[in-house]
Length: 177
Length: 177
Image (cartoon, rainbow over all chains, first blue to last red; front, side, top):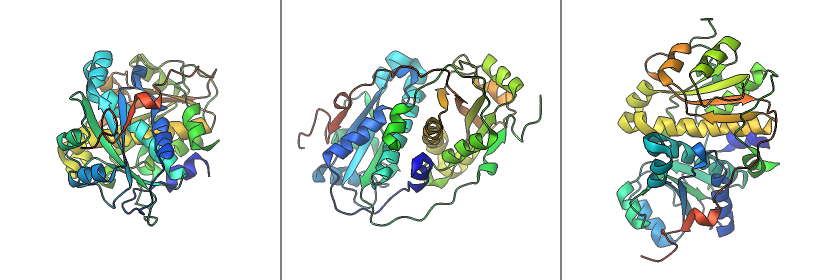
């Protein structure tokens, strides 16, 4: 259906079937993430695949935004130490997060094409999640992506039309300097 | 070629042909951006399309990371006021930036499918760019995406392999709690 079709087909899914997602598909999604752009090619990212029932339940208990019992998660994490050592303060504060979000969009788009539903979740208890996943201190969980086969196709959320969120050349449109 | 094909085909392009990118294609790229996930569906984003030669030159003068004379840019901006009013401090500090990066990846992937080259650029003088584009105070330019027909196909940058950046269930791999 082409990239635009997949982009428009993606929904934030919050109700999943119990069917497991095969490991090789989960790793293919991670691979899609690793092909995102990365500032100075630092790639200060890690992707923790969660599909053990006990770890899923522990994670859900500390993630109010995680809904619908997904059978898998990819927890997108930044390596703050690597980001700082190679990219300085802006690397640690912003660039590694930006890279990770582009990686996450790759993951969600490829999942959509494969008939999987996803939801990007920021509402979780970071320190608790770090403990559950046994993350070292310099690894920061930034985004939890739930993954599974959707129970239903959520309605399209209202999108602002292009002409309400874009201008040519100058705010307010194209007046020459 | 499928989503994974497009994901792997995308390169950060830093040498462009002089051919213009038609306005309707640039607006289609913006539309792709508007279909990204958005925390609480706030959509605190704006996309300034730059394709006027004078504005391009002004922008390039304050953007050391902008290379190869692209005939167009999309400057991805966040609406910090809207993000704060609807999402509080975390909305203003992180969520709107995260949404915008996912939107930017949509833009770059669709561009790749259309045979366009892109490069996400963070190395620019924000206050200068705001002045050039006449952005209101609450609108923050977060990422400059250069867009144009690539002069050549850059080599694939080294990617860390999946097994170096992922674990199952726990850091260090799958040991039960």
